[in-house]
Image 1 (cartoon, rainbow, N blue to C red):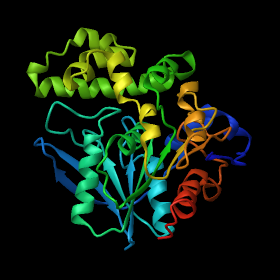
Image 2 (cartoon, helix red, strand yellow; image 1 turned 90 degrees about the vertical axis):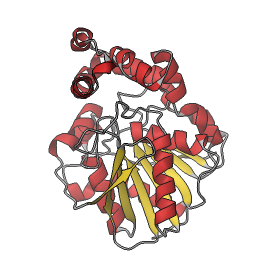
Image 3 (cartoon, helix red, strand yellow; image 1 turned 30 degrees about the vertical axis):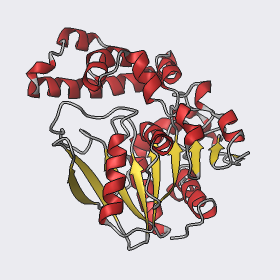
Image 4 (cartoon, rainbow, N blue to C red; image 1 turned 90 degrees about the horizontal axis):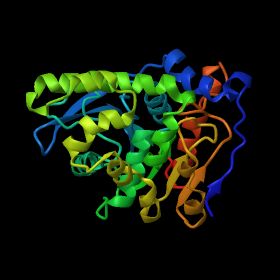
Length: 325
């Protein structure tokens, strides 16, 4: 029954889920120096990887969330902390998210795990790491858990996975994002995706984007109807949500894994807290602190005291995977 407990108790302003969610991207200015490697994919495209290595035998693959990148604060602070505690890291920039548009019409979506599989197989074939751990945030966490439960030929070097603030049930979580409490976040996501869709329409005239409908779009469904559904071959938004969600794959995961979802995460529905799945598993762990917001988990204005999520990622790697460096 691997349901974990925590005494995470942030200072007063950070007990507000929205304050915790917004503080990290708006006010934390951590930096890192990556070494970039561009991989050419099987479909004549590219994926950019950003490495930060110290010479460890263990590599942690970090996957960002919706419209994030290796430059997202949670990616930088996690990579820095992992380096400080003895681990190499590589950040996977999802297609179109590395600062340069990718070459084909397809970019990424919540369930596109073939890119994760491609990266994992590249890493195991071209590097000599004894251990690889996958850590994903939000959409990247959904990719992490889905990949671990979906694929039967995962390399033995992959020892486990950790997912943070994950909408593992897309049907209910997208409905949650439509609520007034999430209007600011939703608008930012929609704005960013609209710009990318317009760029794709310029590069691929056959895309036949209806710009009038695009400008009116206020929901993910509106964007999915024009892009995700036709471009990736789904029947509808509902079909996409069902097929891309990680939740059905959790019972199939065969390596130790951890999901950290705060109970006050405004993005998540009750279906995104898989207590039964954790109770019925010996290797899937669930940690649900009362506070943290969405990919926040900041405890105070003192940066050195605000590494709860980074510390718990390392703790799981060391204590549950038995990997110290």
